[in-house]
Image (cartoon, rainbow, N blue to C red):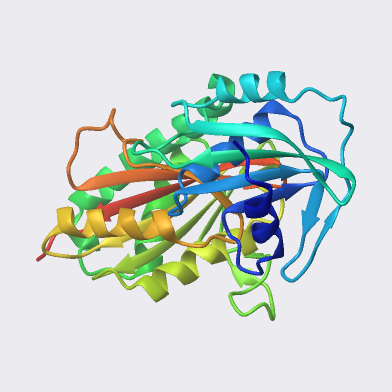
Length: 302
């Protein structure tokens, strides 16, 4: 049962992060994204409200037709998810106008939005090539104590030999402080169009402030909304397994500039190596799903 008082309380609260409002949204793909996002939030449950809009300190009810049936779009949306969440939904009347509310309860297992195979194939092919480049980087003693730029140059050269067109440290987007264009570490084009961005960094511990800056820079540099981007970390620590667990826990909770839908720590299940790991976070950017690959490469100690 949907509690109208609870919905009103969330609409009136300035800090209601477990609430998604849309004036009109019945597309199953977008509903699936919103359901996945709420099911993976720390709160025990959240609401999707259709027929309302909300800013930080106020909301407005625009209403939707009482004759519209939301059952079928929700059924189709649930079919796009890896697991079936616990949901309830219904029509409410607020201020004489109709809205639809969908209550999504958190479940123990993570829920993933299932993209189509055609969308997944291009990132998969590129990540395979990038992964192989990282293997070769690990094997070169020359890069054990190298700078970030030197390691980036090596990765970029190998990617270019595989046919990718790269623009190294292109002035693009806005800087971390928003004053001028920043420098993209590796910007890749395909058929003359932006394809993906690799933002790289050296880490000798989980420096969360430094990592957060690089994660956010990706979205300021990506001005078009790429299908996927990459955060590539060159990691020099003694206990890589412990570092990886902490890294995953942190990026799953990070507040990204675009909505986080889900995270997948098993994205590298087809890659058996222990000292190169990657996971993904899936995001809703302007109504479309985008993916961020988090790749951590252990740099061997001298």
